[in-house]
Image (cartoon, rainbow, N blue to C red; front, side, top):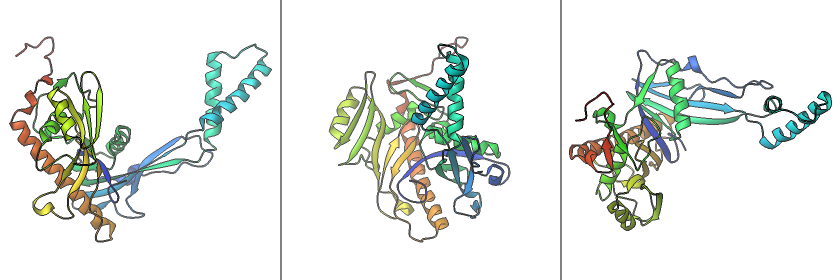
Length: 327
């Protein structure tokens, strides 16, 4: 999975920078054999020796993460050996917890140098002020954002409730896990249920819901069951949707994707196969397609916001601070 081929999982951020980003300033460096270093993180070109800049304010890059983690079973066996040696040399009847922790770290350090690093590659693209990260994992996205900050690129969530300046909402049904998430996304997805432009996948649907009592997953022909849960006050956390596109976007047929509502993130997005065979053109076309889908979702969100979906009973405006009068 990535931005260039296969199905896409993607999240979107706003970026700002004064000068062209210097990706080489935080380039990836391989872990030297026998080194005690456990992790290396940095930028690599999208293709070997390819330029990072693809056009005016358009960049493509990959983030490579190499990690070495010792096998837990080998650590236990080595620790047993070290404990046995410690008891024999010290003459004590047992090893205290502090010393045992030290020996465990020693075992891990010894073994990590023998482990080959495992690599992870994250594909990313910057198109004007928009950053597209080919992952929806919070840990992975966090690493990319931190790395960009090291080369002077500031980032912020690009979700529509921020752009519209909507007041913060709290929910006793859906728990948001970071600053980019909001109950607004769930309320928007609830508005999309039954929408002709973004219908639910009719046969192999997938929906996740949240209630005060439980989290619920639906699969298959979900619509009838979904409406019953919505009538009981459930919030829609994610759903598999279909979009046929409109206007100039109508190339390559309908798009099927899962929409993660709190984070306004897309996963399992199946894009039309590449046509040109040249990675730069194919990448720019796929990123443009992703951007157009996001733009349409933004427009639908704004339409729903104007109708006041943010006033649903499931969510309430954040309570004022103790020193502020309630309105």
